[in-house]
Figure 1 (cartoon, helix red, strand yellow):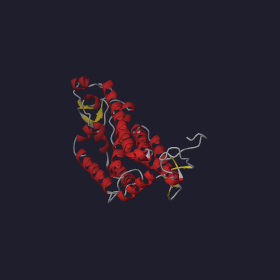
Figure 2 (cartoon, helix red, strand yellow):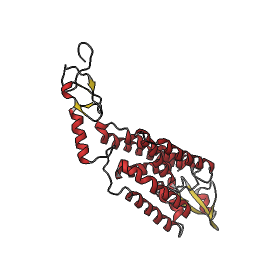
Figure 3 (spheres, one colour):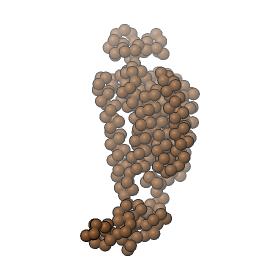
Figure 4 (cartoon, one colour):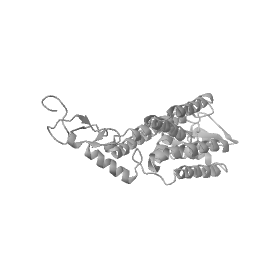
Length: 301
């Protein structure tokens, strides 16, 4: 500040600054003003913008994918393969997320004993299927790629093929995969805390709700048609609530929350240190979700 209290240029000490850079918001004097598409920028931001333009960076720091559909197609193939393998035996019982474990009836594998613990299950001739707290930690990931029926699989995969490429075009492949993974993990964490310990949950819906939440936030920030996205998301929320007891609302809402927070970290990271904020922010969010899963598993163990 000058003696009169006016702003001074951050690059020239004591020189009065009449405006601020439209990109970094620091005060600049007439000698530092570079004409931009909207307003004026400082020389540093102008050089940074030129580097980003040459590198072809996307709005939030990622690199464009040659084919934004490819990642979603690979995820779909993985889901289809898992469904084919799980539909031919008891593998699906070990891939679904059960917070504590499930005691299957020996004479009817489609039935289980609610509330039964492992010792009581095996002592009475039941078949114990381990859950997260009893050692099957992989279920927090595999459950996101497992589906019960072909219809269940088809609905989720069609949704992924529609939403996934849209988000990858904006975020790039790496950020899209991180967003998908965090959303899926957040859905698993919500299932761990809010679902019956001996219930088993499967499906990519939690991750898909996270993608819808991210699409809503990105559309809002870009001043796009976020109302249309909100209507679609609202319809899916209403459908979930209408079929409570059949559909895992816990996984849906957990994934939605995880996707919204992850997208907020990606989209609202300060431009001048975007990569660092995104990496540390997303890492912290992942650690927090994993800590919630571990804490619940220890409580049930």
